[in-house]
Image 1 (cartoon, one colour):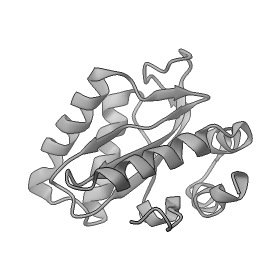
Image 2: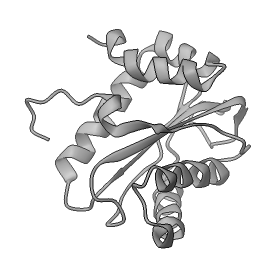
Image 3: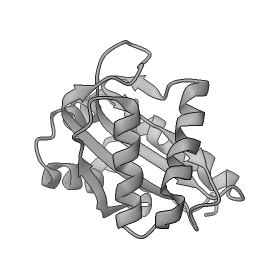
Length: 161
């Protein structure tokens, strides 16, 4: 992806990688999101556990619970062929070691091939920018259905344009 192309969440996250999370903690949520990417055919079955380990290794360096009920776990891995993402929502909130100490309700996970550093950084920057919008964060926290999450996914950029 060149710098001239405006990256959007819908470029990263397919509808099949949007899930209502059942987990109550960070590792469980990451596991569910990696499974969603597997079911979306972005990760081979034999790579699922390795990807979970890679995301958790990155998470153990410093939490990606960014506050405002949002988290952005991410990793670079050779287990994906292109930049991909998954979106998970927890109606009850989950423990994610967030910087504000509050539960996380929306989790966007980004995975990038190891040789695509620029696209990886651009995607993280985009999500940070989106998570900087308090109204959008509130809408993600309050989303009550997969349909509401899909609508937010498609309209998120209206909050920063």
